[in-house]
Image 1 (cartoon, rainbow, N blue to C red):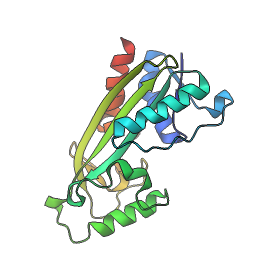
Image 2: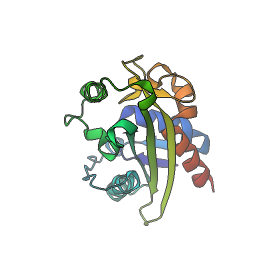
Image 3: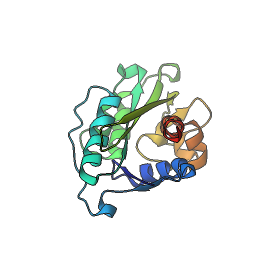
Image 4: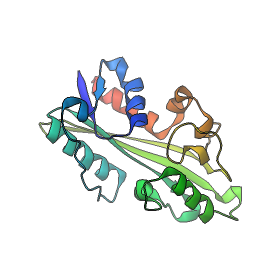
Amino acid sequence: MKYVIASNNRSKREELQRILSALGIEIVTARELGHEPPEPEENGETFEANALIKAKAFAEVTGLPAIADDSGLCVDALGGRPGVQSARYGGDHDAQSAIDLLLSELQGVPMEQRGAYFACSMCCYWPDGKVVTAEGRCDGAIAFERQGDGGFGFDPVFLCKEGGCFGTMTDEEKDRVSHRGIALRRMAELLAQ
């Protein structure tokens, strides 16, 4: 059974495939199906709203069920920023620049005030309009400097409460504790029903 991922992010695709393959789901991209990926405007005020916007757009273009996630980093000392703007934080879609900006904004903030969490809203949208959503959250803190080069986005500076920096974890270790891994396992349970 094929589901289209509502993203062009290779790392996200691999993560979805690792977790959903047990259900016999094959994750494909719009391009693999011969479609130009849509670029819907993510103008929702919540992670869930943005995930739905993306999933619906990809399902409409491909005619397949589409799985989208909207995830972000919420930092206590920044009043929850960057939040739903995480992918656009710093303005240029460059992870290194976003990390530099984050570390700059947190300069001088002691570790006990560097609390943060990753949030993920996962949405599966079928061409007939059926929708299933799942949420995941991973608590932690922001490191003072990058650690490792694994993962993507803010992973090299996120210290997970469950032990370790996302940037130094293997894919399997991260899948067990990450916001996306939690949301995907919940989504897998709902899809299995």
